[in-house]
Amino acid sequence: MSGNMKQFSNGPMKKDEKVNRTGITTVEIVSVGMFAAVLAVLSQIAIPMPTGLPITLQTFAVALTGVVLSWRLGTASTLVYILLGAVGVPVFAEFSGGIQILLNYSGGFIWGFIMMALLCGIGTQMKNKIGGTLLGIVGLFACHLFGVIQFMIVMKMGFLESFLMASAPYLIKDVISVILGFVVGSAIRARLIKAGLL
Image 1: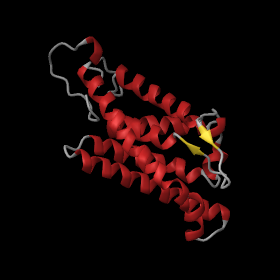
Image 2 (image 1 turned 180 degrees about the vertical axis):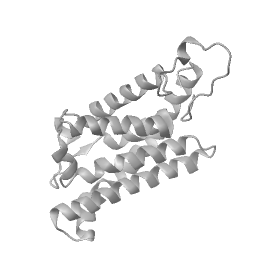
Image 3 (image 1 turned 90 degrees about the vertical axis):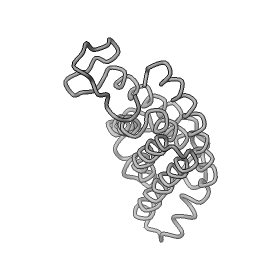
């Protein structure tokens, strides 16, 4: 199964196709939870920076989530991750959590993960792999735009100054992270589909 919901015939349902009242399969629920955990774990691999925004593996983790789970489940998994952090679970970078993280100078990047996971998920379903990866990079740029705008508002700086501080130092690393997310994620996704788990 890719990002779209399975369509069932009137015949008998297989064991791995059990659906709850919301139309979500057990496998989908487990996949969403598992990749929310992957996001949380990879977020803790952080290198502090003078700007206050650490270098982390979050970008790679979000791209990986979108590519493996496709747009619907990848976006859902990212939302679960953000909601866990919002209620105080320390899943954000450097074991932080709480709604204040989403509202401070770095919060815009976390909100931007939603768009990034969505576009990476759509990109992984495209037949043109280069085009799909480029769409994921567009999602990264959208993520950075959200981040720069919130950084600008909270820190009361101009857009260019905010971009140079909060975005520019991380762009090359993040582009490479998205590309690696597509390479690794595509391989994982192919194996999961072959095993009948997606």
